[in-house]
Image: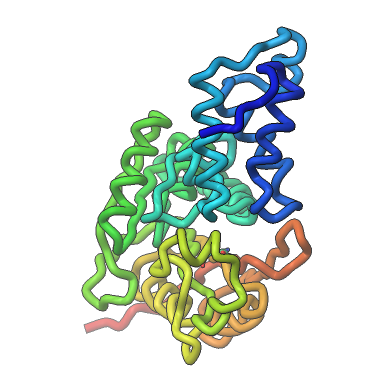
Length: 302
Ligand code: GLN
């Protein structure tokens, strides 16, 4: 696996590892080295420097192996087997989307709504849960809630269940297809979803690190129907999936958030329809509250 660093002190190992990543995009290299070294040592850099830490041969072996995987185009989270989401180190495999920071922003917003629901045990659902990141974060932030995590992919649900065990959080997984009319209903008090939303044509412009390693099932929608999953979510909520006054929060493609919001507004059954921007200032999430029309006046007498 050589060549090896000239010595096993921090600065030399760092220089050596950077050199082994020379086929990785330059803007990614330093961050990768930083995270690989922290992961392998189990210490932040400051602590290693303060300790005058020397790197062992087996650690150098593992760093070299990780560097070759990264150079071959694997995402860092697959190399480490984990991704950070809302303070949790979650397992990730090629069967699930790697949790993204923008999804964290939506969960923080939705967890506040969940916490404000007056039911003793509010019920929340993460539709298209993947790694379980949204469901687990909701449960962590609002422990009194009962949280379900549904996905069409059984291998993804296995990852979500393993994450729930690791995090010692209870979420109920279910293998259901949002696009199948026989999917179960509930109703829930709050529904969050990060469904597939990237039109297939955009695949060509995306990084190989994403398209070659993350599940197409979780990423792409047909070019002719980019709102496929949002229509399904709206209909499912409206047909009894979401309770009256319940909250819906959906992550969207930045170019389609306006269309998703319009889709809700047009039904006349949603209020407080709002588009939230991500940290990069792009329209990223649509949140809304369901208002089931009530029967006004006296009930019919017979
Ligand atoms: N935000 C993800 C990406 O840009 C896509 C997530 C999704 O399709 N739900 O790769």
